[in-house]
Image (cartoon, rainbow, N blue to C red; front, side, top):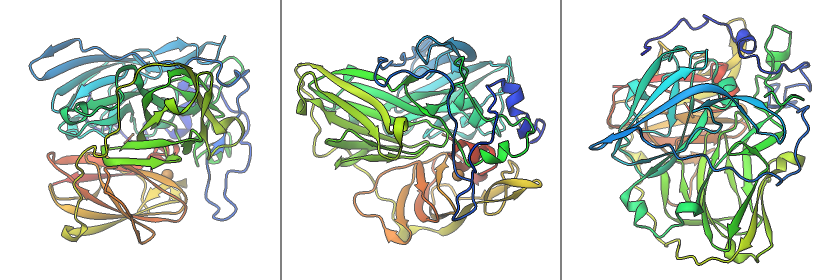
Length: 494
Ligand code: C2O
Ligand code: CU
């Protein structure tokens, strides 16, 4: 078991790629700045590998992890982080870093209130940290970015899961290296169920489909590309806005296809990309039933769903609206060319369907901003850091030892988040509710979120309440290149 902080710059950011041996990107490419702001924007990495035709590969469904043992109210899982070969692109071998050697890692299906213990063994040859994104987790198991699991070591993460049913995910959270380590494959889905959700007639079993969506780029031999930081001037800066891949993967497969019956399906959409936001649409009707923090109070018909990195949405699509033989594309309206495609559903059979989407799904308590004890400001912007440029919160780069806020356990607080360019902001420990965007009150029923996207030059007010656990946690930008370039702050619940 490894604990405690390591010196922040034991290994400089510039060494990341040498350590990884990821394919190097030769040129800085296009200029990485927005003309308007001069602030770095995400940059597209172009693959050299031959890419498959869209919808030629079947959608893989990650294996559901089985507990190694269960005792009373506790389930024990073992996960090993290790390198493995995978066929992501047809005919090419790609070395991935995976939980259990797979990318995505196995899906963990856990239950609210059942203690879930995950023993992570690190066979990666590099330090790692495990974080359950959206988990209501005590601090020692939350994957604080300096709580490293050293190569060869293991650590038990305890997730009490005293929380609602929700679509969560787990991923690497190592300080300064989350971007490259997640890019390599260290991510998986973590679905929490509970009695309330089970009592609903929602689509289940094979018709409850996790869709972990991310973008990647590949060298000619199938190696995952990631910007080389090998001291070549300008390369690191060119990609500090975020790395975009040109291949859209769903559950690790490029633009896959899923055969579906003429029936309702629950799709658990998770944006696991480093820096790409999606606007997902089937071109037809979708009903949103859940958000980051679980079920909505009632279903919401939507035409499209925007998901920034880290965000999730549960939607139900009723394929009985289509004929056998029809194809339904899931498109990304925020992308162009190949990046406007995500996957396709091939409607290939009739099947009976006794599922339904009831008019009432759950009860969502509204956090009352009038009861807030304090309003805190967090400004997300680029600025100078250690003699270069980085991403800052309130003008400062991440310092694991400095607490940016000390919220009191159980207090309602308003956190006012302000951006220069787009930043998906994620808080650990508890879900929050969005109050207003640029001063405009959010309409509609409250919903629980753990990640909210600030668009360019926005102010988003959220109402928070931290419960059950005292200790230190982080908030950060979930654009992983921003996060690695220090856009993170620690807070301590007291
Ligand atoms: Cu999904 Cu702090 O991370
Ligand atoms: Cu950011």
